Image 1 (cartoon, rainbow, N blue to C red):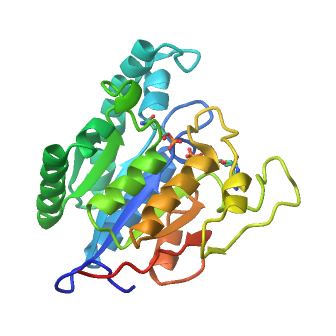
Image 2: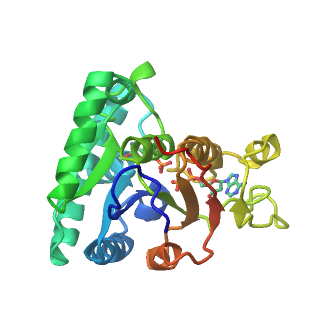
Length: 270
Ligand SMILES: Nc1ncnc2c1ncn2[C@@H]1O[C@H](COP(=O)(O)OP(=O)(O)O)[C@@H](O)[C@H]1O
Ligand SMILES: N[C@@H](CCC(=O)OP(=O)(O)O)C(=O)O
């Protein structure tokens, strides 16, 4: 993989985003089998001289399940309360699973207010760099408990692209409940075809990206295309693939065709 960060040749740096529909059963409980496999694969890739940052969704759904609520909260305060409980459950589970593979993790909760502010943004970048130097896998989510209105990203696809840009990642990989981007929503159109490579994000592509069909997904494909625009404009390749098979991350890093790749624009190094 060609490093695009300026300066001396560093390790490869990958941001991986995993959505709620991948991390949870239809019951809302965390899918421990997938999380364990993800922890193993990411820990193993990390040991092969690659820096990893994980952006995770799932806190709201995990909180709803743990609180025994019978539906996703409608009010902001109830959603924030569920996120607060669920984030704790999510990080406890990640910490336990990654520890099995000798991998330390940390938590970084972001809001748009933080990443839009120069001072806070630089502070966050320094924290990421320090954690990566320590050999930690930072685990990022939106700070749903406090992020409201204009402070909120609202979807982790966008947050993961902003994170990849902040840390000058070489690649952003989005793990979802679908094999990639299709020319139309495959869950609504049986003749939809997977698009393996996107060299340019056209209006036609944006119009083909529809909403989520799952009860827990937030952004659908439209937020993934928005994320792809942020990533490719920063010179970062972005891949969308199915999170059911975390081991496909090995194939992606070996340059094999998996899911859909959105090619990063060549960014002139300064
Ligand atoms: N053109 C498209 N190609 C693939 N999936 C699409 C498309 N348009 C809409 N979708 C929907 O987007 C969903 C993935 O987004 P989402 O449900 O938010 O998952 P996640 O929780 O991983 O973010 C797919 O399951 C599919 O139903
Ligand atoms: N911050 C929210 C994630 C919102 C979100 O983007 O979810 P998803 O569409 O499943 O990636 C949570 O942890 O539930």
